[in-house]
Every structure is written in structure tokens, then in C-alpha cells.
Length: 479
Image (cartoon, rainbow, N blue to C red; front, side, top):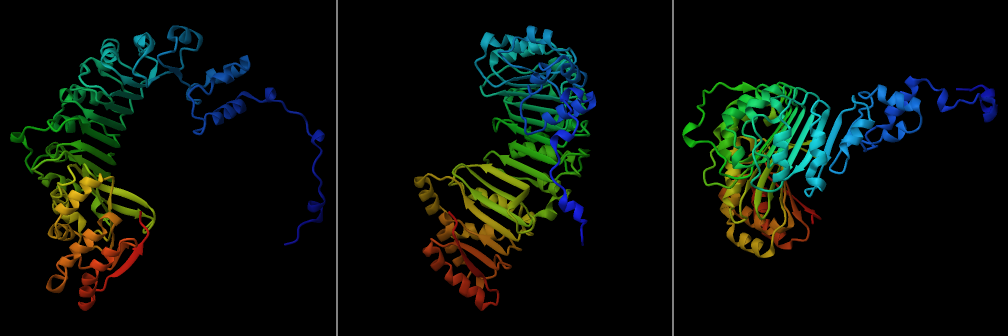
């Protein structure tokens, strides 16, 4: 293609040949676009707009005429002189109350003063104490019509419960509710009046804030926009009455938009909860159960089978720590890529020596592990003494018991600490038992540094070759 010669002959234009345009000559709508650009995500400060209002009266006017477009907030913390601040700025700017300190100046008087403006508070984010929570209970008895986000944290025990009158029973625009260590037994009565909720996170619920699974399911069913639910209990004592377990024919409520469900507590509670709900849009379920002798989860398995999750079970991670063991199942995105999208995660708090927990997990959810094609077995932090005891405690048949759940497994990666142990366990699968477990295994990834593992694996590899089901060993540089 030939371009006109005149294009190449053009010289840099003379800057003096253009008319001079000052920012003061820009129309209000252009100024507003520029101001809007200033509050992009990378400028992470809710007070970004203060400097604009001090430039001139016109800029101040443009800013205050568009509080929603510019997402203006007045940030109040324990040091903010609330009365002076609210007298200076226009009434239409919503208030964001945020304080992370536990030792508050003036005993939180400025926080309480800001909360008194219930018709202007849009966000509340507080680390609470016993004293502050008592004062919140007294001042927050009116509805908060513009509140969109509420986050209360308590890291100390024995705080008062939130009363029925909290928020005046109404926060119609609330989208995100996060309570950690805050007892709120009246919550099921209040949730239906917060119909715009998208995210509900209730963590470290004390025994004084216990809500039954039946009440929780009924309350959540009124929230048709709800996408994320997290429920976690502080103690294993928070569990339903064993004599009031739901029947299999129980009519379930539907949470149409729920995509992520997270739970920490007794398995009986989660069993009771998922027996009462259907979640057609769910893509991720994570559970973390307290250690217990009885681990019966039929309702959980039925709940998972009613979702689209099992179809994504191609990759798994089996992870051991001193105080937890968990299995995560999902898929790589893209296939074979680095990002692991977790569809189902089950963890149990236990001592490292409670090896039967791993067998328990795999045995109970074996129908969902039968599609797994790739697994990474790994370990977290272990005290050397504990790991030595644990290593001596584990016997080979227990490993084989776990392997039985993975009938479609093709790739297995083993960490350095477990290389010799698992290689030894695979010696159980030789001779006549060679196809008892892992019939589809094709690739085994061992740590290069573990010579004992490489030697111990040879009988298994030889047996698989003889039965025309060869397994290729890959040496890795895993830490």
C-alpha cells in the first residue's frame, strides 16, 4: 500500500498555532467526567474528593451536585469531630463509619454520634468491644434506609447479643452483612426485611447467637438476590437437636441466585441445613467440620448431586496439616492450567494422628471422586516430632483405602515428605492385587530428591507393566 507523500512531509505542529483552552473553560459535564475518572479503583481513598471542593466554588458545586455519580461519602472514625464535619458538608452526602481500633478515644463518642444520623449512614465497618456493642444496641434502634454494607467484628468473648430492635428491624437497601463473633439470635426475623441482600457472612457465631437450621433456611429463602452465604460457629456445641433431624421427603426452599456456600461447624448442622434448600445456581461449596466420631452426611451428598457441581470434578487436592485434613475437588482453568477452581472443599479439624479422618472423607464422598483424573497430595506445616509419630502411625492399607475412591485417576503427584510413605503403600498393589485400586493411573510424579521413594515404587511399576497397564514415573523438583 502506498501512502501520500504529504503524510511523511508533515512536520510537528506549532503549539502556538492552537487556541489556548484552560480547564476553567470546560463545561460542567466535562468536569464531571474528569472528576469521575479520579475516583477509579486504583485511587483507593474515600476522601479523594475533598481536594476538589477546595479549588474553587464552581468545582465545589459540580462535586456536590452529583454525589451518587461520584460515590461521595463522609468518612467518620473515632477521631472525627462529627458535629463539626456534618455542619460543613451538604446533608445529601452519605456517611461511611469505619474504625478498626479496639481502644477508642472518647470511648467511641464520635462513632455513636455518627450512628445517630440513621437516615444518612450508608456503610458501617467496626471492630467492636463489649462496651461499644452495648452502646450500639442503644443507639441503633431506628431503621437505616440507605445502609448498604454492615460489618461488625468481635475478637473477644462474652459480648451482648444484638436485640430484636437492632436497625429498627429494617435496612431495605442492605446488600452486604458481615458479622464475626457477634451473637444475633433474632437475625432470622430481620433478614426478610433486607430483601436486597447479596452477601451474608456470619462467622464465629457464639453459642448465645445460635440459630436453628430450620430458621436459617426459612430466613434465607426470602432473599432472592442472595449470591454468597457463609455460616461459621465458634464451638462444636452449636448443633441441632438429634431428635429433630429432617426427613428425606422434606419440602425444600429454593435460593435461586446462590452461587457460593461456605460453612464451619458441626456436620449435623450442615446436614440439617442443606436438606432444606435447593441451589440451582451454586458453583462452589466449602465446608470445615469440627472433629467428631459420627460423620454421616447423606443429605449433603444428595444436595451436591442436585447441583451442576459434580460435572466439574476432574482435579483434586488432598492436603494434610497438623490440625486439619481436607480434600478439594474442582477443575483447572484452562484444562491443565495453573488456576484451580474449587467446586467442593471438605475440611475436618483433627490431630495429625487422626488418619482415619482422611479415609472417612474419601469414603463418604467417593461417588464424587470417581471422576477425578488428577490429584495433588500435599502437606502443610508439621512439627518434626509430630510428623515422625504420624509417619510411624500410618499403615499401608489405609492409603489403599483412600486410593479405592479414585477409580478414574490418571495423574498423581506426591510431595517429598510423603514420597517414601506412599511409594511403600503402593507395594500393596502388586501381584494379584495390582488392579485392586487406581486402575486408570498412567502418570506418577515423585520428588527427585527422594531416592527411597524411587526404589520403593519399582515393584508397583513392574507389576503394572506385566498386566499391560504401564505407569510412567516423572521426577519433579517439588520443595
